Amino acid sequence: MKTNTVLLRERIEQNYMEYKDSILEILDGNLLFSLAGEIAAVEDVYQLTKLPGWIEDSEAAYLLEFAEPLKMLADAWESYLFDNSSDFRPTVEDVLDKDDNNEYYITAAYADDLKRKYGGDIYIKDALYKELKETKMKCRLLKNMLDDEGVGI
Image 1 (cartoon, rainbow, N blue to C red):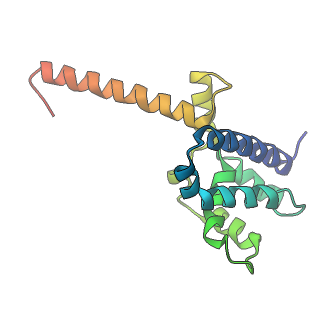
Image 2: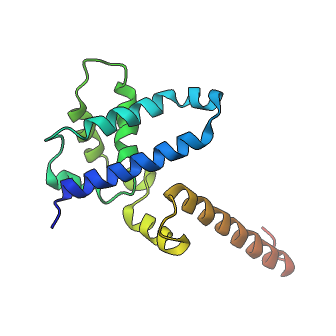
Image 3: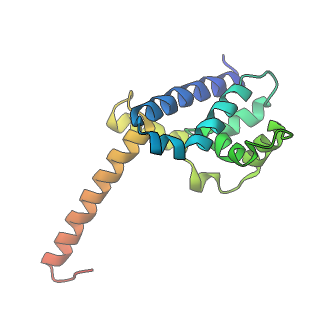
């Protein structure tokens, strides 16, 4: 049986490949330039998470509750990106200590539900886009039904 640390390493590897693919699809110099800090943070965190002992197995279990732990860590790391004296460990601890992670990041359970709904090979962002589009259509239908009943919103 794989440890949480190994499972997290695999999830981060998958997150990295999906992120890299999404960035390579852009190929717009201005947009890529504006994303330079984010891209650098993702690359740094990806390399830092390859180092042995960077996380405890119990901490890995927490990060595995989210679909994109690489994004969580990179978002926290981006502010330290150009501070050469920074150690990665406080960034990991900062992410682990946040109570509002569930509000800002997609949980792995929700991502799994979306992947089942829209096809297992779909990227999370593509599945979210489809879900948003579907929700928007449902809202429009409900609004039309209310308008037909003379209720209006």
